[in-house]
Length: 188
Image (cartoon, rainbow, N blue to C red; front, side, top):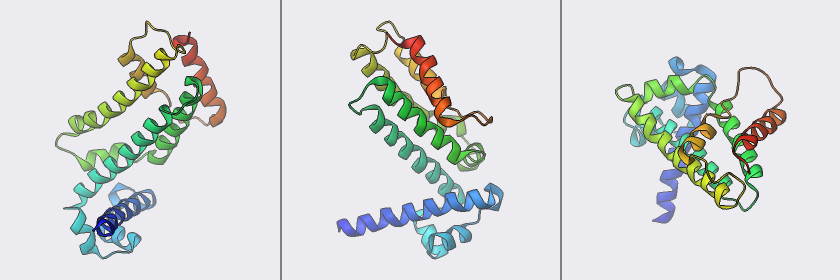
């Protein structure tokens, strides 16, 4: 039974990963379920076993990739190392996520949930906010961040950092600078 459940999850993930590849290659307007099925090496009917329609597939893709990113962030921010190092790792992961979705995020989100896009995305972002609030609280508890910080606002600032600029800065220098600027403002 456990193997069967894992195969269902693996097949679903296989279809979602194929979807992102097709999106990168053809864009949102070129996304067709049959192309996703071919890329995932499954029948078109198999895609419909897991997803009602293209909109459901896109909604699941955004949730899958976003929740996976959030899990990575949660893990990185809970590691037993100095706040500054965890911050750099968080920003590196954030930039990778932004690069992965560059040019696709807004279009996919619009297609995935056209009736209540703002509410749906807010629900996703609230999870990220809570993870970042815990991260900031850990920095305050360890004495690496000022105790007078407004935790929710600092977390929201972190969420805004790392939205990779369209300019071509060396990634390592960009992250180091973001860390330095933030730590000068919130560090002890």
